[in-house]
Image (cartoon, rainbow, N blue to C red; front, side, top):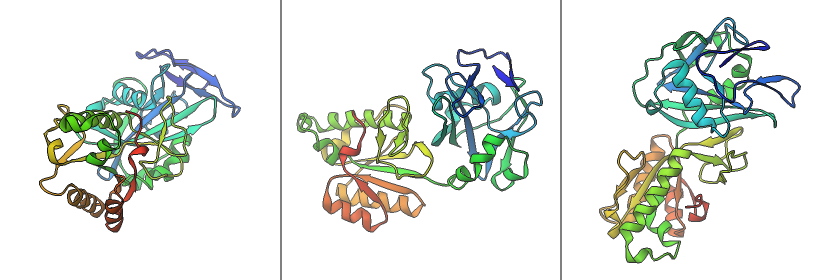
Length: 308
């Protein structure tokens, strides 16, 4: 379902969320349950959609997107819309950040994602005149949709931002007296399963509206206006816990320390900082906290983790 000025135009994707809503801001917005779009970055380019002439603000450039279904997350909706409108495979993108304009009665979320697999964009319905990879430096030379234009400068300034969470698994597992000492590898495997969930769902930024009942997390540094982040996760295992096996196809990196777990964590953090990462180490070990601070990483204790 797409929109044209004050009327709805039905395409081949008819959904419960299609329709206009009278917003508290005094305007009408498309999406009975809000809306979302996907901004895909590939190197120095971003994928933009030249909106069909008959659509709202037709002829302008923005990102593939549309109305959310009832109880559909912004990420799920953005990925679905990009697949339906531009043939972007969900498995070819890695979400990084989400930015939400929330009017109270209606909200629009832009999910920024990195291309990690092949993407050959093509028009799959009548909502686009063209789909094009556009250099980041040339975006403002185009006639942009007003909503996209309003947030572009803020989003563009953080396209290179790379969040990394490095976990001291031994310290995290040891913070909960659940009998982990009887099966260290099993306890580590359970932790890896939780991390996989957090990696997939992302983390609500502390101080911002999390949405869908998810608690905000101090695991990511606050960025004005950002509502969610999908950091890379690195879990460092040591000793008997190195036998833990992660899920097939896991996006979580597992490092098995050959010697000191603390030395390995510091080395991982230092290398990630050197690559430009904004690194957070999860540990309550004060000596390790001081060491990771010395290489430019921040730290939080295990209590900062979402429930598991």
